[in-house]
Image 1 (cartoon, rainbow, N blue to C red):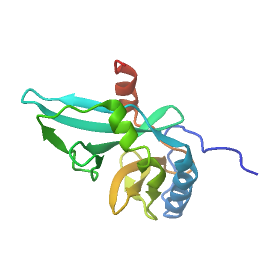
Image 2 (cartoon, rainbow, N blue to C red; image 1 turned 30 degrees about the horizontal axis):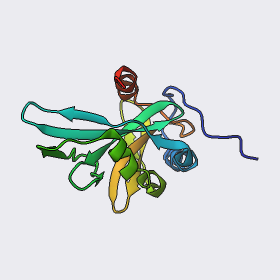
Image 3 (cartoon, rainbow, N blue to C red; image 1 turned 180 degrees about the horizontal axis):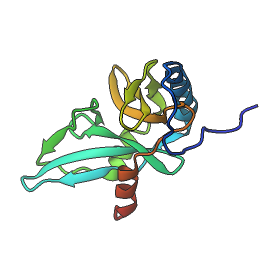
Image 4 (tube, one colour; image 1 turned 135 degrees about the vertical axis):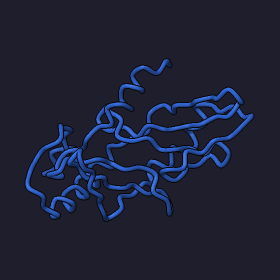
Length: 158
């Protein structure tokens, strides 16, 4: 019986066990179909450069940002926030271009441990690149929101 997507809650402290990594991976796999992209965050610099991030959202909260390359119209690898100069981008065009990307995301069968947060980070890949990390509580049963990004989304003027 499916009881719906995994819950969201705060970090937990427990004795370390590597077995929780497998639980975290399974939790992200279960949550993935419920994830979506929010409206892109577009930033223009003083020299005309533009940078775009697309928040990955789960149950109404942001969990990570996916860098978007405005020149290729595709996600950029984690750690490479793509920038372009002298172009204008449209939120609707970006969402249209990445509408298929969300369906192509997959969970990587590995997790890294984030201390002092005491949480797992499970990578999501698109094609052959890692584009996001989903933080999961230490016990592996709940998704941890990116509170800063969630607040940034709430402040965004539509």
